[in-house]
Image (cartoon, helix red, strand yellow):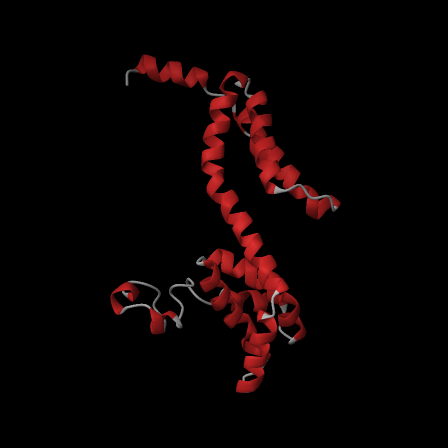
Length: 186
């Protein structure tokens, strides 16, 4: 690029303030839940923030192009959120908690292992460590807290693995070549 082209592109860039409108509006909308008790879904807050940013930057003529780009980027996250919510609802309505607790009671290990086991099982069920931790904490939080485990320790134990596919339990199921260069357990 030549200097003329660079200068021309720099003239088309929005100011710092106008470029920060979109993330600030989105953060404010998402902060309404903990601050005011009125929650706006992230799937609504993100596009509203983007549209506010487009208007602030006076780029309304690129709104359609920007929205199609944003929807293409956001569709994967939206599917993950809907899928995780669906799995969490199914698990909460099922008797998997009772089965897991009965299994632990019969082995004599107690309810202390509910947090790491729920994290491992939900990570395997959702095929994602992040989604697994979310589902496990939503489904088993009350049981973990009733077992006398603090919230911080319960969260740490749910996430006490590098990944659902790299947990110690995966040593039983994954071939040796897939486990190489993964988490090093000491």
